[in-house]
Length: 68
Image 1 (cartoon, rainbow, N blue to C red):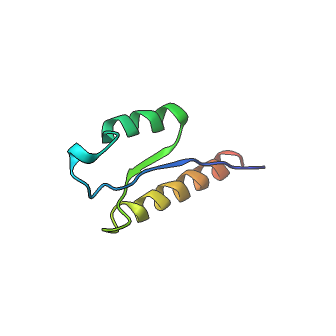
Image 2 (cartoon, rainbow, N blue to C red; image 1 turned 45 degrees about the vertical axis):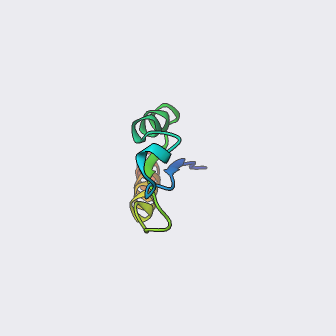
Image 3 (tube, rainbow, N blue to C red; image 1 turned 135 degrees about the vertical axis):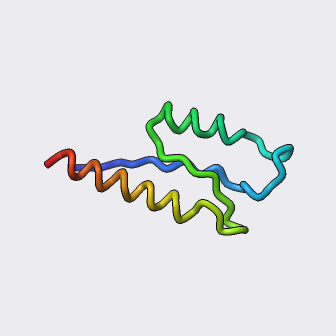
């Protein structure tokens, strides 16, 4: 069985809101539409990266357990 989990990272979260190209709400809505895990992230500030990978891992774990 193949499991595919999408993660959508809205990077550059550390920038001021007026510099952001996409709002957090738009990102969340799009992620929901495509069935992806969403997280606002900043590699520079180390924000949101670990929670994104945790959520991806949880989604994989849930997928595996549902197929049993």
